[in-house]
Image 1: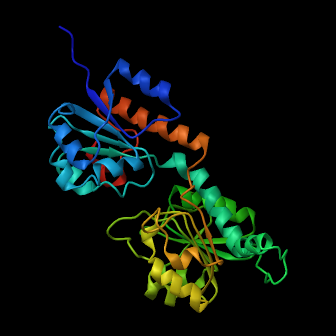
Image 2: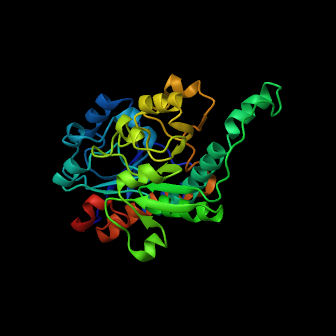
Amino acid sequence: MTMTKPHILLLGEIRHAKSEWEALSDVATLSACDSANREEFIKDLKGKYSDIVAVYRTFPSVAITGRFDAELLKEFPSTFKYICHNGAGYDQIDVAPCTDRGIHISNCPSTVDDATADVNMFLILGALRNFNGAMINLRKGNWNAGVPLSNDPDGKVLGILGMGGIGRALKKRAEAFGMTVQYYNRKELSPELAAGAKYVSFDELLATSDVLSLNLPLNANTRHTINKEAFGKMKDGIIIVNTARGAVMDEAALVDALASGKVKNAGLDVFEAEPKIHPGLMSNEKVILLPHMGTLTYETQKKMEVQVIDNIRAALTTAKLNTIVPEQAGLQ
């Protein structure tokens, strides 16, 4: 008797690891989602997707399925056990209802660290040196006339809010430019992981950092962590960069802080309602804006796709995910 292979559904597109995806067919039946919207997807979960065991999920697929929330999860078949997500952040997935239904989630943590930290350091240097204003001035035909003197990174205190893998990769880069690094996490890191970075309270981080880098995940507890009250605790003329998620900072409050001079310059790779950007940021030459380019390199995208595929293979062959999300770490 021939055993039926488990059904795996691709939500989105695989661009760089096509051969690795096709190789999964030795242990699974593979299909790609062609539902047009959330309503049709839910209908298809009762039909052609009624036996799926796992999904390979991409960020853009939210345009079809919507959030993976309790409402959607209740429509999945009883066979469904794994969400293998392509991305370090997984704020489009509600973890609690997944856990309640016995659905395990994997993400791509370490593979994104270096590429994102590179963008992070670019934004820090660009904001400190006022490169955005200078480039705009140049394009207006004014060379460097009227461009104010900027600041060196050497000797500045970098405060990292969220010292995970990206934060630690950023620390190495910042120290190469002569910066001193301090950080705040919910829990202090081991001496090995901290590698000399000073652990401080949240309020001390705000009050004593010359540059503040946001590297914390977005969830219900971290939304608008940086708000009007937080800005009030910072040094005048602080530099702020964000490569985490836009909604960890109140963009309207940032616009006000830039106008008042509390924030001297900012560098942003993420936005609250991306691809929409607050008009007060779009029009402000003090802000370097990037279109969420943290992981947009060929090498990193390929590694992320392979990591998702490896998670699927591990789930099917060992019933365990290689990189299960922290909230579910004790479930395997």
